[in-house]
Structures are given as C-alpha cells and as structure tokens.
Amino acid sequence: MKNNGFTLIELLATILILALIMLIAVPNVMSTIDKNKQDTYVEDAKKMITLAEYKIRSDTTIPLPTSGNCIIIPLNSLDLSEFSEGPEGGTYDLDDSYVLVARNGNAYTYYATIVENYNSSKRGIPLVSRNELNKEDARKNVFSNSELTIVKPTVGSNINGYTVTNIIDS
Image (tube, rainbow, N blue to C red):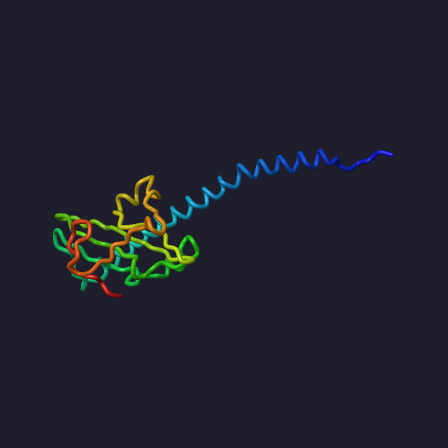
C-alpha cells in the first residue's frame, strides 16, 4: 500500500519557509503602508493650500497681508468636504491645522500645518512651505507626538519671521 500523505519533515520545512517569507515581507509591507500615510499628509497639506488660495481669490473681503506680514486661514474656515478622515483613521484638528499666507514683495508664500488626532496621539506636518511640500522627499516633514511642534497663531504673534495681522473666521 502506497502512502500519499506528507511526512512531518516536509510539513516542518514548509512551515519554516513560510515563516522566513513572512519575516521578510511583513516589515516591507508595513513600511510601504507608512510611506503611503505620510504621502497622504503631504497631499492633504497641499490641498489645504489650494483651498486657501481659492478662498482668498474668491472672497474679496479678506484683507491680504502686506509685506512682512501674514494672515492665518484655519482648516475650519475652508471647505472640509475633502477632509473627512485622516490617514491614521482619526480626525484633523480644526484648531491646530491652518494655512499661513505671507507676503514677500509682490509674491505670496503659502505655508501649511496639518495635525491629525487619533488614539490619544497626534501626527502631521508642522509649518511647511508649498515649495517644501512639492519636493520629492516631502514626507520627511511628517512627525508624530512629541516630535510634532505646532505653533499656535495669534494676532500680533511672529511666525516664521512674519507678523500675524489677521486670523480668518469661517
């Protein structure tokens, strides 16, 4: 009689091979997922800047900053339909997420801060310019918890060398 089953050695070898594959594959998959989340923060910050730019161009009542000054546009003053959930499954902090619009000579410079709250943690991008967000390595600007330094803007405060002249309400 011929036995068609697997031996114990063959089963153990198969399990060992699968364990080695998992040992190599899981960290690579987790790294890829984290990079995608970081890219989402960068894209959401760019989206905030675009929405702020649109708001400034479409609402003529917003006082534009003069040279050396800036205005703040909080996330809650923008169209939030694009920001239903953050990459970690939490919600974006409406008070700590904002766009800073500064004037340098004849040009405006845009900076974004975006913060997500999830599971008693924070993750996001501290104040970063549009130029930095457009770079290939922009995901290096994503930080978590204690590494994430958020500057709370107030009228008259100095942020990145600009004086805050106005905080736009919704």
